[in-house]
Structures are given as structure tokens and as C-alpha cells.
Length: 237
Length: 287
Image (cartoon, rainbow over all chains, first blue to last red; front, top):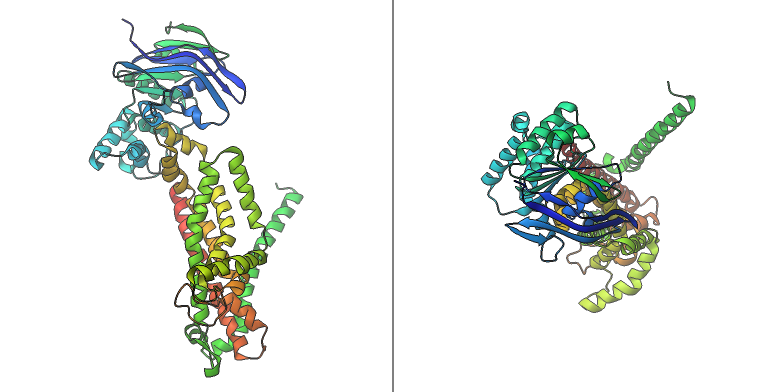
């Protein structure tokens, strides 16, 4: 049985500095699946991700037309509606970038950072959630004895897993991953793939990847973009 | 192996660095040598604590030390929040042309000669303060501090803007991507990570406020007294040096100005060292 649609884009057009990046992209992303977005460089893969958490709004000279709907509590909401706060959206839609971007603070503070911004949780609850997410990201065993040392001393792979843990701490319903393994060695990349397969039980995952072998290993659905348009959609076979 | 021209350039830079360091030490040595009579007589510390009363044979600089600290610290009290606010306005709140225009205005302000600020102070600010408070001549600690605020703020604003701009974009993106607002991004990411620059900007501005002569000379009133209120006239160390320097070279007044120089030098040096320690601590953490 096919999973319900979690995110739906309709006639999405995006341009940056007058250059069109997405052209009438209408794509459905199924719930609790890994949807891999593939295509040549410049086809609009990363841009598509940024339209789903509205992160493009921080970049000047960008325009967007079209509609993006997300299913929350059994109902579809237009995420660009004024009544839908962007901060709420970004807490529901986590994002991990191609280059790991830990903040210059301790490992613990990095993971707890989203909760610190959100506020309203007791210290003990935050500590428990930090441990839970570091375990989920398979980093706990490597860092539990040095949680209060700087995150900038971690290796590239550890930093990326830290960023995944940071994205997970808000228990997002959707996780956007923009080539999360491209800067990592083979073994670390495989560890992250296994992690994603576990995470899809509770989370809808959209993964931009250049590696076809990776996509065929873990993706349930493959979405191919070309020149900002959906050209093919199918299963991993 | 390094090429000859690379070695020459490197040698030039090393020499320049040594020369700058030597110059700084030489300046202090020069003041020590000229202030030697004060040290020999063991009067250096009593001069710093005594009032200025030539008719009693006392040439202490205590009123000038208090005047200097009052005017410069008060101006920093006004200037720091003002500059931080302006820097946030330029770097965070306003976008595009508005930000550019504000920045250019501030850059232009850094190039205005101090004497122009002094004139504006005398003909605009002093009468305003005199009218508003209806006390004294208007040439007082408050007027000098307000004018110094205008003088030192542009440098601080530009320093703060540069410090904010040096915070990597990826940090800000990380904050926004987890649901942070622009304000949270600034408070939790931009400001803490631009801290060393903010501190250095503050110190440079304080150094300028401490060392500025013309504003205090033109606006503070130059009375040799320990100011008891913001509306009292005061004389700063630099004004005192400028005023006494024009007097008799052999007089005890003249000798006392080296105590002013030594105090200013030591105070500024300790301030810079404190800031270095603060800055280094922060950088180590951010590594």
C-alpha cells in the first residue's frame, strides 16, 4: 500500500536574480519514505529543498510562485500562508546541509541549540533529548565523555552526524538532506545511510544525492529533475 | 626555497613590526626619562593623588585624572549602545540601498576633522545644554561626553559591522534552519561570535576618547577641579598637557605633565592587555 502524501508542490516556479531555477515543478513526496532527488548540477535540487522550509527567503533577489502543501495532523496546510509561521515550519522540517555546519560551541550546546531557541523545556528534559538524538545519530559512543568540548574539533563525519542530531532534536516530521555524505569517506557515508533507513520509520526524508549507488540502496522513490522540471519519477529499480 | 624578492618583502615586514614595537617602548622610555626628576624626588604617586593648587605649591593631577575618566567613560556609556544599535541597523535590520547609505554616512563621519565636532559642540551643543539645564555655562562634562560620543561612535560602528560580517553565513543558516528568528540568530549566533571584534572596537574607541584633546579642550570648560556633577566644568589630562605645555619649560607645572603622560600610557596599555586577554579567551573557545 502506498504511503500518503506528506508534501505536495504545485506549479512551483523559482527564480534567483532573474534566472529561472524551478519551472512548474509539481511533485508529491510520500510520508515516511526516503525520496531521493537526483539530476545534473544546476537542475534545481537544492533549491527545491529550500522551498520546502522557506530558507530561500533569507537570500536576496529570489522570487517564488506556486504552492507547497504539507500534511500536519491529518490536514494539508499551505506553508506559504501568512497564518503558518515560518519558525513553526522550520521546526517541523529539519535540514542538514552538504557541508557540516556545527556552531562554535560545545557538542552538547550544538545539539541542544534548537531547544534553547524554542525554550520552555526543563534542563533534565533537554539533557535527555540531547542523549537520545546523539544516540540516534550514532555519535553518542564517540562523544559522551566530552560533551562539553568544542564541536569544531570533531571530524567531518562526526560533525555531519552532529548536525543530523541537531536537526532531530525538534522531532521533525520531515528531514531535508542536501548531499549529506558528499564530503565524507565511504564508511561514514554508509553509517549515515543506515541511520536514514532507521529514521524513515518516524520521519519523511528528502535526500538530494549525486550518487546513484547510494540512491538505489536507500531511496523508496527517485525523483529526477532536469532544468528545474520533474522529468522522471519511480522506485529504486 | 624562498625567492629573493619574497625574502626581501618578509624582511621588510619584520623590520616594520620591530620598528613599531620599538617606537612604542621608546615613547614610554622618553616619558620616563623626562619624568625622572619626579621619580627621583619620589613624588610621582603623590602627584597623581594630589589636587592642582599652584598657590600652595601642589601640582597634582588628580582632578585631571577624574575629569579624563568621567568624560571618556561617560562618552563610552552613551556611545557603546548607540554604536551597537547603529551597527545592528546597518548589518541586520536594513537591507540593500538603505544599509549602503547608512554605512557610507558613518564612513564619512570618521573622516570629519575633530575641530569641526568641536565647533558644532561650542555653537550648538553647549548652548542647548546651558538652556536645557539652566545651570552653568554649558561647558561641562556632559557636553564634552556627548560630543565625544559622536566622535568615537563611527569608528565603533564600522568595527562592529565588520565583526558581524566576519561571522560565517553557515552559522546563521544553522540558526534559521532550526526555527530561529532573525533576532535569535543575532543574539545567539552573530553577537557571541563577533565578540572579539566588538571588544576591540570598544577598546579602540575608549582609547580615542581617553586620548582626545580637542573636544575636551573646546567644550569641557578646562576648570582645574574635581567635577562633582555632570554639569561641572572639568579638565582632562590631554587638555592639561596642551595648556601647560605652552607655559614655562622649567616650571614645576611643566614637569608635572609627564606624570599625565605616564598615567595615560600605563592606563591605555593595561586596557589593551585586558582586551587582548578577553579576545584570546574567546578565540580559543571558538576554535
